[in-house]
Image 1 (tube, rainbow, N blue to C red):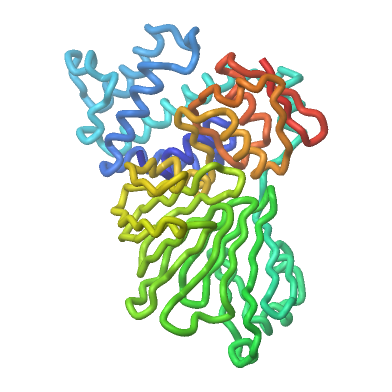
Image 2: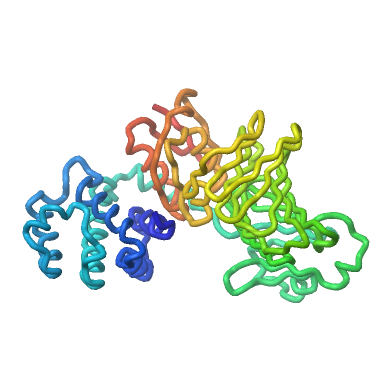
Length: 396
C-alpha cells in the first residue's frame, strides 16, 4: 500500500487528521494509480468493520453505499459485487465522495471502540507526549550546538561553523574554509536523544534521517576516495551519487558500501541484530568479524546476528518510523516497547516476563500521545498497562 495513505489512515484512526490532510487522503484514494489501495480500504471498512457490533445496521450501510453507486449509474447486479468497488470505472468526484463516506464511517467506528469518557485512558494520553525534532551536534573542534534552537539562536555562530537549515527542514552542513584547512582529525558527532529525531544533509548532498536515541559520526569534509560515516541506532540514507567516491556506513561489526542508493540501517546496541533494508539501488554488506559479504537487491534485508544472512525485506515496516508512524507486523511486545521507550523517552517494566514474547500487529501515528499506542495494544485483551511517572508497566 502507498506509504502516505498508510500514514494518513493512521492519523485518521487516531483522530488527528487535519482538514488539509483529509483532502490529501481523499485525493490519493481517488487517484487511479492507487486503485488497489481504494479497494482495500473499501473492503476493510465495509466488509470488516473494526467493531463486533456495527455502528450502522446492514440495511443502513447498504443504503449509504447505494446512494453513492446510483450517482455513478451502477446496475443493481453490480451493486451486489461492490464490497470491492471498481474504482477505475467511477468518475473522480464519485470516488472522492465514496472515500469521504468511508473515512467518516471509520471515524465513527474509532469513537465507538475508543470512548473519550474513559478516565483511565484519558489519563494515559495526557501523561506522556511523543518525540520532536531535536538533536545535539558536537563539532570536531569541540563546539556544541542544540539544534532545536537553530532558528532561535545565534545564527552567525551557526553559519560560521558551516551550519544552516534548508527550506524542507534539513540541517545542512557544508564545511567552511577554516575547518577544511585545520589539522583537526576528530569527527563531527550528531546525537538524537530519546524522544528526538532529526534530519541532516551531509557535505556531499547525502540526506540522512535519524531516529530517536541515535548517533551519527561524520568527518569535517569527505576527502580522498571514500565517504565514510558511522551510525549507532537507526537512520535512513539517501546517498548522493558519486562514482568516484564510494559511500560507506560503519555500524558496530558491519560495513555497508554504496555509490548512490536508499537504505535503512537499524543498529541499536540493545537489539540482538543489525538490520539493513535496501529500497533502491544496490549495496554490499560486510560482516567485519567473519569477512563475509552479501550484495543486496531492492526489497531485500541483510541481518547480522551470529552471522550474516539475507532475506526478503519488510519495506513498510522498516521505514514506517521515517514516515511518521509505528507499524507492527506480528512483533513481540518486548521489541515494541523498546521502540516506544526510545520515542517517548520512557522506561518500561514487565510484571510478567512471558509478556515480552506476546506478538501484536497494528499501525498507529507516532505523533500521538503514548496512551494511543498503549490503547491499541490493550484492545487485543492480551496485555494491560499502567503509568508511574515516566515508567510504563505491562501486566496481564
